[in-house]
Length: 532
Image (tube, rainbow, N blue to C red; front, side, top):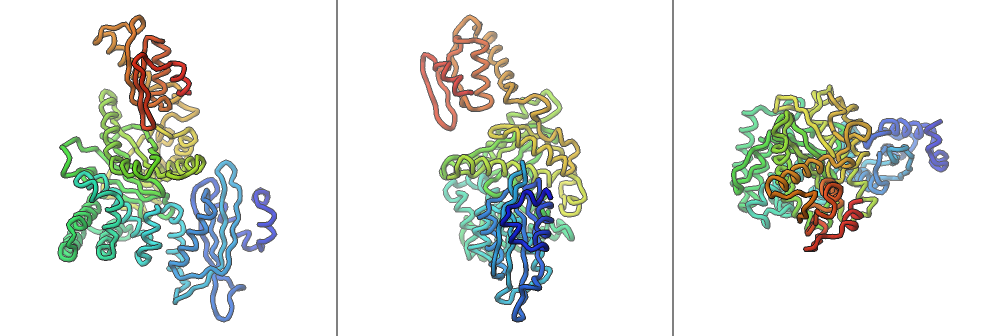
């Protein structure tokens, strides 16, 4: 009855009882999640003239209806199935959003076979379709439809991993667009696909490649590339892809219901030959998802640090951020490590670069919230110890890992609540500790300005004991990097005014969106208005 109340009258009247029950069962599988459930069965009533037809039923949680229909029909086309007719309905899932129910009557063409193996592959790829990047979809749906979704995902992920490494050698030749274009050229794509196969075989749960077999096949691939690829840039990229395979310690590539593709990397793979020597992190995670890519870097086994979302406003800015994303994450994690030097936890940071260019305010928020879910759920794929992960994930790291996150830029309380609940559902040992600043527990960093209070203590000590100023009595000037809408800078402005009043003169302030300056000090009323 509760389900019927959620359904529109037209949906109920158009559905025969059997199909309605089937879709209700799919609804129950994805309610409260962001997942996809699929069922395929022969249509005995609709088959005619000796032609077998099939019903494909799917439930998409929190997916734009037109996107669900477009992805499903594209995938069916790739597998040589014609859609005879389709029905699409939306059913409310309460606070979790909306579930799109799609049912399509399809028939095989061009010799396609409606067997169990084909349908299992279609189910798997349809579940993945929601989370594929535009680059992956373009590669496997348009450019190289023979490749398959899984190989395409591996290739586009490796291209993104290579970008911050290779761009240090030649920022123009190894721009993100050029890397993908080079690797997927008709002449070279067979080598990229072979490397993707090497990766898939290395981590196949039913028979992963041994170290000796990995070395043997890697050498064979290098010889083939060396003799067949004349372009030195293409050679370098393909060789680096082989190195990524060797430096991957875990992946969730074979998880059935994963939200994104995750790599637990040996941090040495992120070192460029063109950079100055610097400390090697303890661990690096890389997550490749729809409209986002994310890194998590930590400098000790047990470490804590924030998760921030970066949303550039233009393609040019996005390209620059992509090249610098890993270094930004590294730098923030290293700074956190230095701050945490006197406590047991080391420093870490997660930076998720999200493509929201051209989206409305509502669309941008929708994509950011999905990115947080996909990023953190993929991290959980790689760190939880459950029956599913033991079955599907091959572990060459050989050590349990515990991660602690905190909220940073553009992460909201609703994200934190979801992450904690998801960690509990996924079997994380201490789900309440997986992310700090929970709305109903602990201290909210942003609300109480925890970080800024610490910054101001250092400032107060420096003013009194280094510069010899009493900030309660003497005026002083400040230049601030970080805008009034930021967590640390915004709270610091409030603390400065609270502690020192007009003695604190902000003569310059700047962030990514703009800057302001006044040698006599910016107006405090206006600064505080911008904070709130």
